[in-house]
Length: 337
Picture (cartoon, rainbow, N blue to C red):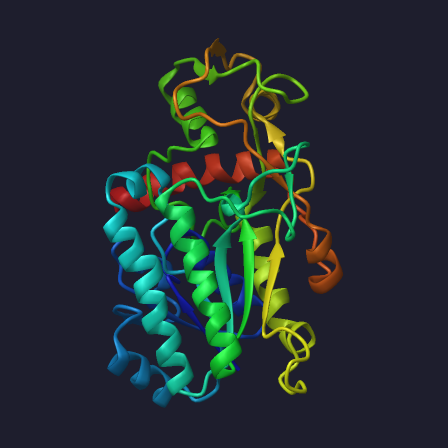
């Protein structure tokens, strides 16, 4: 059995590919390599190209008729970039997903697991989000993902494409076996900044200390990338239970949303404390007012993931920090080689 993974040479897609391979499902990777790294797919069946390339998709399905479904990870995901260039984000995340969905339907592939974002929700008063929370995307990136999901839901209703959308917030860490990790040597999320400050001997700046959270600092739902990869496999393995292929007309949705998260999130102060536990108490942090555009954050209620996927995160924040530090060293070795 095989699975087609779009964006399978990127951070999350490559980790998902490894998780599937370890469980006996052969990944077929399709990646444009605009942001992915070819070495992340070096031991996989690999096609370099665009997800909107119909003849290429036809060739892949003709050569691999045992592809049982698609994990769609190919996307642009950097929020500030989406603000500067929304056209590119809608073109890649929405228009190319529309093209891909059409190619899947034409080739008789009716199973997709869509890598999405819980950043499209409006948080509840306690900063949690559930699958029932109102949608209120705040930037072109999250809007492009929401619009892609609306389109996929229409495809599910009209053409028989069955879609499970997995929404999550802040993936961190690396493949525990250090086969893959973040491509960017200077990631912009808080943990990436901490690692950079630690390596340069500079203090990390906590921006905003009077948010309405348990310690005054912003909250993020950090989740280890291997836990995310496990969830994608579980969704694939349980797909026929989540969305049965034969349903009487009008009964049961061919499109399901499942949130992935920790159920409580991690504040910036807590992340600093976990980082110190890994690297030592000498790691310094200073406080500063919140910057324009900073937000208090949110965390995901993962009850539905437990119910449908029998999935919960297994790795801790400390594990993710250790794996991120180990991957930073490994990435330097790869870049020099």
